[in-house]
Picture (cartoon, rainbow, N blue to C red):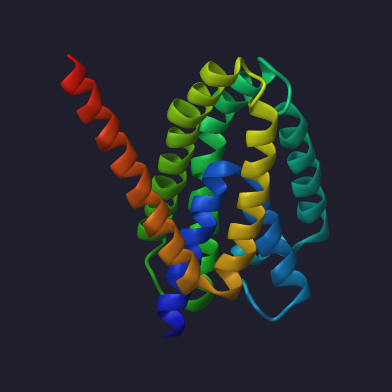
Length: 190
């Protein structure tokens, strides 16, 4: 069961990285340094270094404020297109390796795909829809909600990974259903 929990935890953490690259890294770093919930194997144990934790806090603050300013938030999303999947790959490999012997290349690829998919949905579908429907006024509350979701998802992915796996599956199913429904409605109108 530990191996399954480790993999589910890794999927939840990498999905969280698709919303905010640095929050799951900081959560894992803090839990690895101050609790027994995660024991990171080398080289991933570098995340628990005090300087790395401090750097992650600074990066979280930069992203937090950059994502709340109109126009800058779009530039931030473009920059994060490379950072979030990379963070997802790192966090997946670090957390999966803590419990399982999953091959590093497979772990990195899984994390990259999960975080990249979440980021793509966020930056190509959700955020443009929010900007278009609210004239940009909804971007700040949505950004705050994303940060809260990323934090909760990161913590819960470590504490109760099976629940997070079910939530991620249900949410993904809902998004696919909504996109399918929208496509069918547009096709009927045509």
